[in-house]
Length: 218
Ligand code: GDP
Image (cartoon, rainbow, N blue to C red; front, side, top):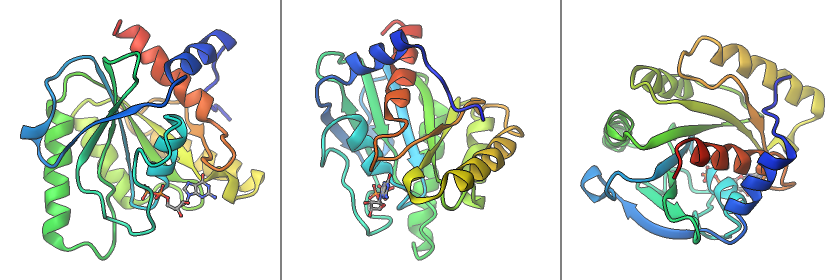
């Protein structure tokens, strides 16, 4: 299975970027509150409860940086974080989506914010699209993929909570997810399977972000 693989040098670059805990920059409830377009932005998107806050906290070594909660649909803002020594690289925590009980106006507000953000953000290097390894790709995920395809936003699928299923089940969901993304032109072809519990895949994600920063020379 083509789990994204990195050389020891690339993994070391990732470690260096995440050596110290990242810091919170700002929270934008709408586009007027976004910071100026500069540096490199890497966004994290996924359905509510996919494990996005846990993954960002594990990645950034900052527990409580992104709020973890069992209450889906709580965070509605675009939250910005940055590395203390590398102040031109930003992680953007996008609001979770696909919460079945969310009121229609909330869903519409989310869709508008995300659509406008994806269309207009030229310094957005990649979106990591988180998919729960137990559930695989759902209709709402495909809708977001289509939005990113039409906005020409490069995205990479990250499977979360890999520790919750058996290795053969993970291999199956991996293959199914690969087949699903093959139909999407803006999807990066390599997946990363992660677990915030065991730390699996975290070093690879850090390396992917560090390589994007290097490519963009930020
Ligand atoms: P978010 O809504 O996407 O930000 O999801 P959270 O990070 O708040 O996680 C939702 C629930 O899944 C919480 O109860 C977490 O403890 C749990 N969780 C998140 N990531 C993992 C993981 O990698 N493994 C396991 N076993 N549980 C996880």
